[in-house]
Length: 194
Picture 1 (cartoon, one colour):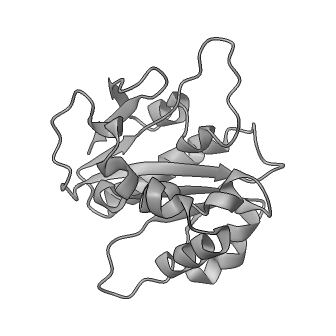
Picture 2: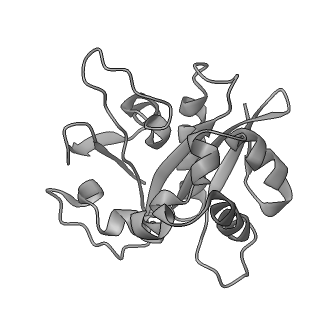
């Protein structure tokens, strides 16, 4: 897989990965960034507009990070990674805070929040490569730590692709993150101090 930074110049590739229906298309990687209240009432077209603006920030804008993965030149995957402070949903959620005493305003901690793998490219292990690229992206931009908040299914439970957009523990572990807490029955907090 070849990795490239997601920019407005790659907008068509972003939308190719997200597809024309389903969770990634509907969300446009905005739910965790905007928070449930703002996201819930916003039409998908407006979410796409928000994302497009995030991919073309003015020089003084907060850091936005997302990467695209290409397989044989075709856009196949997406991963969002940015300072944890940019994700409104996590500020009011028990993920990642339950049982931890973290500074919610620490820009040095980055979060890998969202994966999307294009239909036709799933079940090939692309999430592993995307997670590793996200960690390296955060490292090169000065992150002091990287966290992920994967979902863990109950034994025998199938997880829909829409739920697994936050990742599963395997790709995070392969990228060097280790579990630091279990805020809910199905969610983990994984972290790598850089």
